[in-house]
Length: 177
Image (cartoon, rainbow, N blue to C red; front, side, top):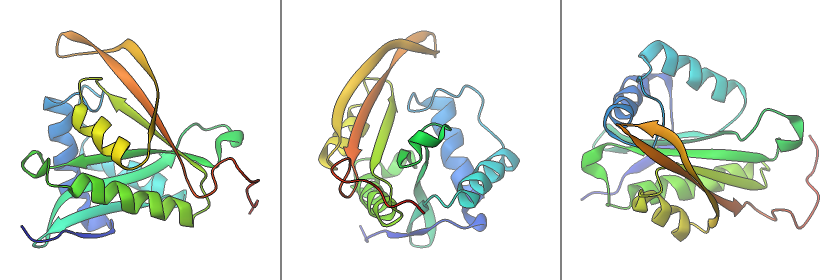
């Protein structure tokens, strides 16, 4: 398998991103959305992240988008401004090839360069061993589990919380912009 190219996402990537996310919504438990957003909604979400200065990346193989990752605000209140939440999604055929980890590693680096100090992973479904494993290998620590907070596909689902310091984390005060 050739190595993926990881680059910033552009608007032209949104149809592929929407397709990847559509599959995750309809068949997976990584997201608790029940109805997949259309291209217009995905474009709106992309614009919000771009306007906020957050990193949004795609992984391509032979010119085809096979995965994406982005960071966004963890919470809207100003005290959380140095903390981001990550999201990583892959085409199903590309799972377990290391591309998710490459996307997450690059996302971590991009967030550190932007001055963020903490990254939170909110992992849908405690049975999602792949995502928990990738986050663990990228330096995240288990913070806790919210049991039975989502209901999808006729069953209750947990949410796993993991966290990783970025840069100096909480060891020093951030430089205000």
